[in-house]
Length: 92
Image: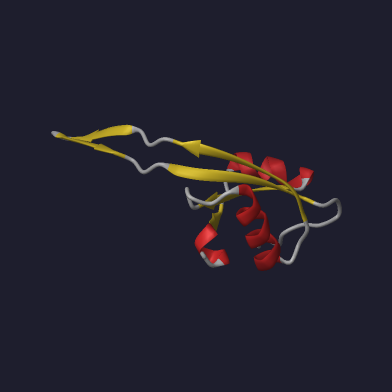
C-alpha cells in the first residue's frame, strides 16, 4: 500500500490552476497508478479538508529533439480535486 505522499506528488501552481481556486478546485500531480479513491483519501489526510469530487486526466509525453538526439518527455497524471464549500487549502 502506498503512503499518502506517494499518491500525491505535488500541488500544481500555474496560471490555469489559480483560476480554479475561487471555485474550490485544486490541481495535483499524482502517481499514474493511483485511482480516484486513493487520491481523495490522500488529500483529506494531508490537508485536513473534505473532498467532494476528483477528476483525473492522463497526459502523454511529447517527442522532443535536442541536436541529433530524439527523446520523449515523461507521461504524467493530473487530478482536479473539488473541496466541500467553504474549505480551502493554504497554498502560501
